[in-house]
Length: 110
Image 1: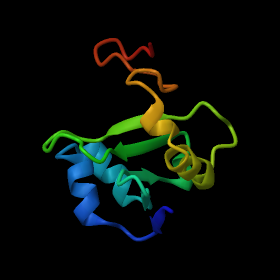
Image 2: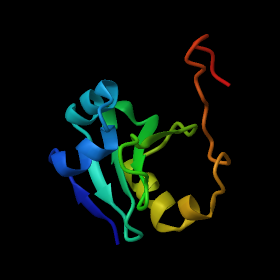
Image 3: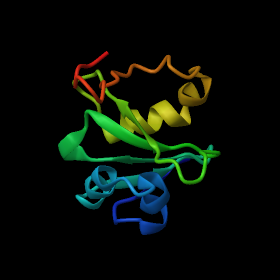
């Protein structure tokens, strides 16, 4: 069972952002924080539902969490929770998630 926190969680936002101003600002602007039964944390915003910030259970200290970009138009907090709670997140090998990666030099999506 996932636990949902609608208030800002600085003890989770700090390691999630790990000094990244963009992530910190995104989290401070109304993110809902969720702790899954597997121990992962993620943050989701209804006004920016096309991406989710993830802090996995054993994420390296000092590194920011990572974004999962959503490709579904009807993505909801419930579907995000379902993705983590079903074990799909843990079963997906790295790089198999439906992500687009932005090239920091060209700004193009790969």
